Image (tube, rainbow, N blue to C red; front, side, top):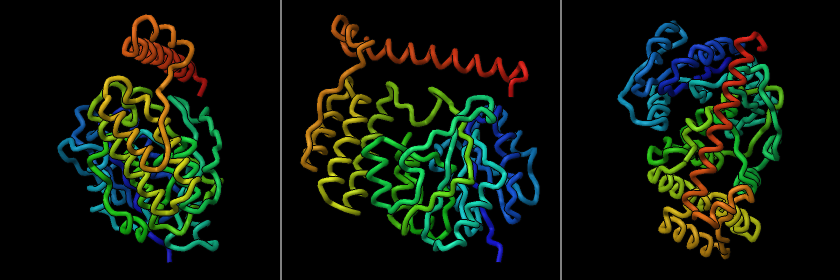
Length: 334
C-alpha cells in the first residue's frame, strides 16, 4: 500500500513566498499526497495566490487570525494522511524529501519512529542554502535528542520532520498559548510518544530566514517573554519525565541560562521564576552578560540602552545582508 501524505501549510502574510512553497510541495516525487493551506487571516495576497493552486491535490481554507498553532491545528483537523508533513509558507522541500523518508521508514522503522533530515538556511537564493550539521543530525533516542537540544541550544526546523498519524494523534494539538516556541514544545510531545528519531541525510529542507520577522524572535514583547517561559517550563518537565539524572538536570540549567538574557532587565519577575526553576533541579543561574562590544555601553548607560543598541545594530546588519542577497538574485546569481 502507498500511504497518503498530508502536507500542511499554515500561512500568514506570505504572499511573496507561498507560490514557491506550494510548487515545492507539488513537486514531491511521492505519488500520494494532499496539500492543505490554512490562511490565518492574511492581509496581503497570500489567500489569492494560494487559491491559484486549487486542484484535486491542493485545498485552501481561511480563518480569522488566531496564530500559527491554531492554523496548524485546523489543517490537521481537515487532513486524511497517514503521514504528516508540516511546512511553513515560506520554506521549501527537496523534491524527494518525503519519498526518501518513507523509504527509510520501510527499512526497519515503526509507526512510532520520528523521521528527520538536514536543513539549510537561505534568504532569497535556495541554491545557496547553507547546511550546517549539528549533533542532532543522527539517529537518537528521545532522551538523548532532548538533552542535546536543550543543553546545546539546538533545534530542527519544523519541516524536517515526517510524522506518522499514530504519533501525531498521540502528541495532541499544538499549544495555542505559545507565541514563538510552539514547534519546539510540540515536537517534545511527539518525541515523548516516539520510539526514537531516524535521521535521513538524503532528504533536505530549505529554510527561508525571515530575520526579525520570525515568530521565535522575542525582542521587547512581554507576551512573547511570558510564553517563552511557559514553553521552557514544559520542556524541562518533558526531559525530566524521560530521565531524572545529573546529566538531564544539567541540560535543564544550561537551557535556562541560555534563554535568561531575553528577560533581562525588563522582567525581573520572569528572571525570578527562571531562577526558581533552576533551583528546583539543583542549579543556579548566573547574571546575564553582554558581549564585550556592548558591555561598555551597559556600564555607561545601563542595560536597556545597551540592549537597544545591540538590537538596532543586528537589524541594520540583517537589512544589509538581505539587500545584498536580493541584489545578487536580481543580477542572475541564483
